[in-house]
Image 1 (tube, rainbow, N blue to C red):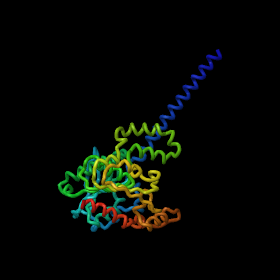
Image 2: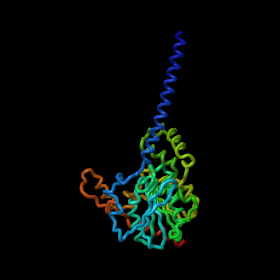
Image 3: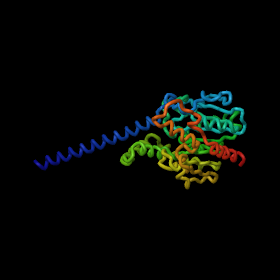
Image 4: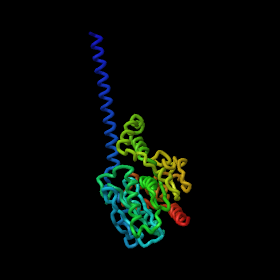
Amino acid sequence: MLNHMAKRLHKKHVIIVISVAAGLSVICFIGIAIAHMSVFARSEYNGYASDRYLLYEDLDAARYPRESFHIQSGGNQLAAYLYGANSNKGLIVISPGHRDASDIKLYEITYFVDAGWMVLCYDYTGCYNSEGGSMVGYAQAAHDLDAVLRFTETDEWLSSLPVMLFGHSFGGYASAAALAHGHDVEAAIIASAFDTPKEQWAYSIERFTGVFHIPLLPFTSLFTAVTYGDEAGLSAIDGINATAIPVLVISGTEDEYYGGKSSVYKKRDLVSNPNCEFRLMEIPGHRGHYDYFLTDAAVSYQELVEHEDFSGQIDKSLYMEHDMEFMDSLNDFFLDALES
């Protein structure tokens, strides 16, 4: 009798353990799914820090006129903007970062327009003036840029221009991955980019959860496989290797979004494109995810603004003041590509 009762009790404990484990597994998977939905939720202007970042309304429209139009990407219309329409030097397609409005690239856009380029920038699916209930995921950025480039290649006016790609972070990934589609592109600048959705989502979970990402790894991998399928491995490195055009990969040494150098830079030994070069930003205060674009004055001003005692109106131009020597080096890269 006692032996029988012990067996029943043991069986009951096993069932409880299995039930708890199954329940925790479901909770972990759902938690990761909710986190992904939050990260790729639709972006609206009410979440854009327009107190510190430029809006088009802040510019002199007579100096920087733009044309607005739409580009079909899958089932959604992307809002696109063309600047410097009178230029015939070439077209630079700028891809923004994650959850960034195209407006935030006005610092780079105005620089390149002043340098004589035509510039096209756009909002991703699920962002700002573009259609879409959400941003979908990492791979969607590459699909959106693919749609933009197909548009430029079929447009009678734009198709006559040499095309350059410039992307930072999320946009850097898109600019590299889209090269695998065989677009007629002369050169690309890939700044602070990750390599694959699978890799970047795994590191995002690590950043969000710290050491707890280790027991979550099986659920993170399962979620990525279910959500992205074959596109979990859609690779920036593969895109760079699919072409022999000049590509400039830029990374900071202390990029907070990658735990050090960007993943594309760390995988530079896998790059077979003979015309790909790498630039590592190592100057203190200018070796993170984006600060290498900025002047010393901008970095200092941002620190002041973020201090809890700061009050008053933010100087948007100073807050994001770009280092002209750095920007000139990007322009020179594109010019050299035109001449090669």
